[in-house]
Length: 58
Image (cartoon, rainbow, N blue to C red; front, top):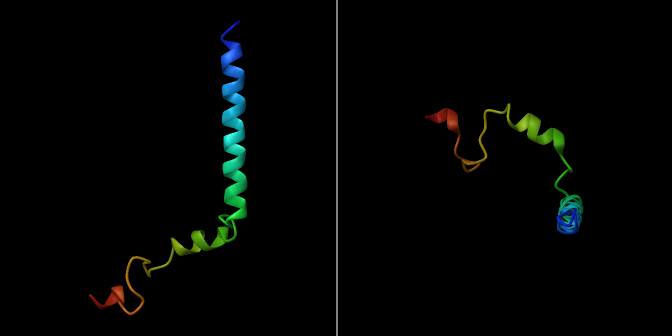
């Protein structure tokens, strides 16, 4: 039972860390465009090439 005196504060601390991380991602607009990623994966243009470099020229 004395192990609970260690586990309960550790679990509360990890819960608070997770909540702070979630609030930080919401405030930094990480979830603004969920449809953009879904459509970007179907696109033929790649983000790793410069805009003037057309991957179909090769």
